[in-house]
Length: 505
Image (cartoon, rainbow, N blue to C red; front, side, top):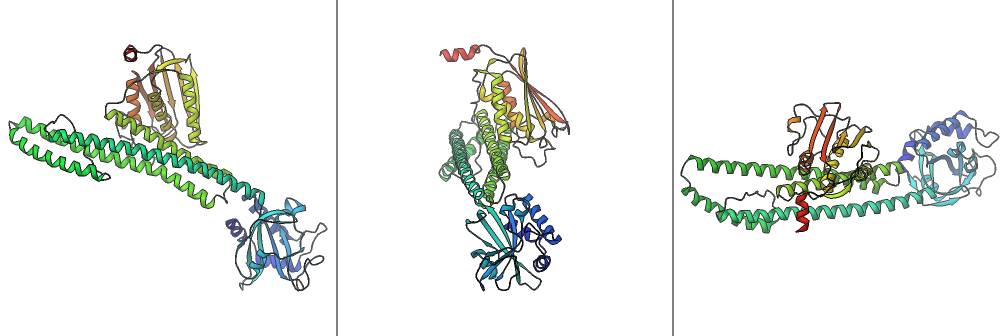
């Protein structure tokens, strides 16, 4: 409201307004045909189109014995009086509009402005035109004297409705954000402590002389108790290695093996450091989006339109979806490293599964892209691993949206024949030919992604999930014109023999 009032004041010519007051005459309807009146009325209409809930008006405030007016004064002689000049309601609803040179008593807000208090805001109040929340600011001449007042009214029903909607949506957003933060911290803490426990056990085996186990060096000091213990274990390990080095000087072959192992450990340490830094950065970005959106809604939610508020909520929902996908990818990578990523098929309706997945994706991206799903052939039930299939399709659809221009179309085609194939096509930036041979490598990203966020894990996870299904994945891409990925999986109408035996056991 304050910003709208300040912006409107910039378009008011104070000298012309005073001249209108001193020289203007009312017409038969009680308004004025004076060009200065009409020009200011058009300016108020322009502001109203930008902020439809804001109704502007101007008036003179002064002693009732000295004011120029039409008709009788609304106050006793010698009291402060308002003389209305131009009211925006004159172009919308004449019943709610003050007439030109109409007299009215000066309220508390008008008196404060008159006394030089600057821009003033009022609580909700009622008058003969309705119930409002208003603000007013002085209009000064070239000498800095207050000669008129610019007022702004907003209907109280809209203010109450807006406040109620903001409180409701803020409460929902706060609860969702709190839950997401809690789950994120819980999952990440579980992953980190698990790796530390495995690291401690591996280090103990190495210190005992068992070199068959690999060790992943820790690079962060968030768990002092664990790290203190690891320091002692590493001290024993170094001493044990020093003794064994005297025994393995049998030849250059043993020396080469040791150097190779040390180099692999160094590379593994660098890879681990890179992974942790990358995940930390990628998680910080959506969290910043959520925090910024909530701060904007908290501070300025009462001034923005419902459409802008919806965009802020949409950004938060998209950031939450990004974090969920990232957490799923990290969990799958962790399971793959630990050898725990397995194929657990169940019988599902493939077509229905794809439709539900597309609907979830549409809710996550809002109106930024158009996802069109279609199917060909008989696509009924088949045995698949729903978690792995969801990861495959989620990553491919997310990439199609991420690397395509806003408002573009993404096609998702399900085709069932001897095998079921999932084709996802976009019209995005495409993949350079030089990057295509390494596309499915862990952490590799194409050279043309520029500032588009990503971890480089998605396609590597997709390929691993496809392999576990016994399927294939191919792609066709041209830089600047788009990319099409095709995943082909076998249609299993019966549970595989190996899984039937596991269930029977």
